[in-house]
Length: 103
Image 1: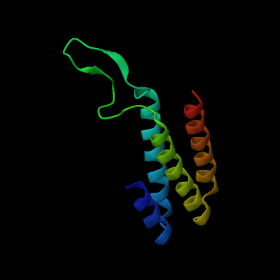
Image 2: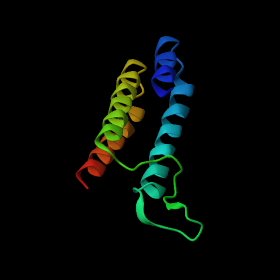
Image 3: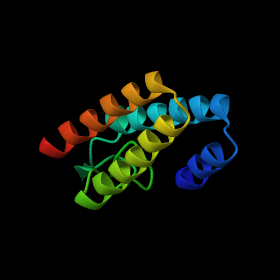
Image 4: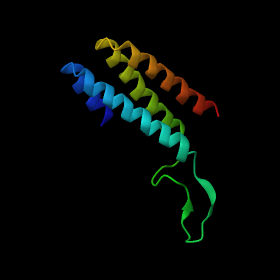
């Protein structure tokens, strides 16, 4: 979904929508870092697994690779649209994802 939105912003030169998309992706990444640090082994009182993000399996190598692919496409779109501030923020996001992969 994100790659399609990035392609749309690139083709139609939608700078405002691109900024909003970047903010949304950044917010999602922040939520995954905050609440989705992985599945904690153990069972809560109701017999449910103790993970805070439903459907999230944690930071696997595949999920990190997909996040990085999305961010590099975002960086390319920022360059095409001449939004260098967003490009810099995207580089910071890429760095944060790489830090997650080393943890």
